[in-house]
Length: 261
Image (cartoon, rainbow, N blue to C red; front, side):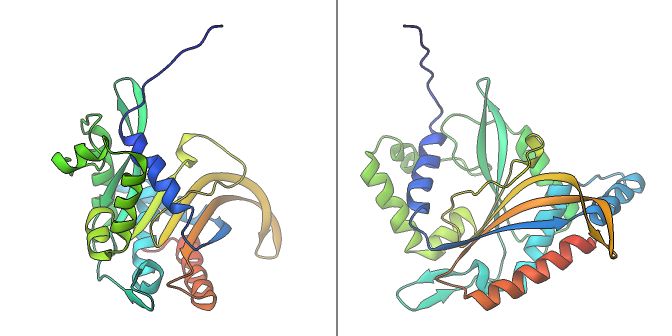
């Protein structure tokens, strides 16, 4: 019998705990298709005439932040039994893949005030995070773990899960540590026809899939367009169905029209 045993970094333990807690969130899941043909064209034109380049993901994060700001309930936290708390800033936790001891490992990077900063600033933060050195003890990029965080990895599972439950019952602490929006993209890894549904403890989470060229109706004609597969998780505890639809409709308009490129 031949086999190999590999040790994974401590950050994977935190990811497993998040998945365990996230399964109990009352998220409503949407599987969406957005026509990003015009938006990607505008980004290519922008990069031709500007020295500071922007990526599609950086622009998409910017659009999401600015759109959510107009529908703030979508990123609110439940506090107590019948209250929600809404923060002024849109802080988005973005998954950045880094090389750790020869292994590619996803790390969350919290980009703050996404509703205010420029696309160029977002692109710069992501680029810096990718090039930043990390150790197996890091959980959140740009925020070095202290003694308490190191102890976290030594705790048994039931105590680690209690930590996450405590965090979510204290929204101010949760917002400070992980923001109020989650964004993860596998589309940059390769072309995948379909959607993936992430698990999250955030009030709202975006799973960005691939951009696929496919025939669709455009201006009453069949045309080959660039279609983005995107999944969205929204906490039904803080946002009802009708406001969800209005938010998604505005998001669709902003993404497909190339908001502020």
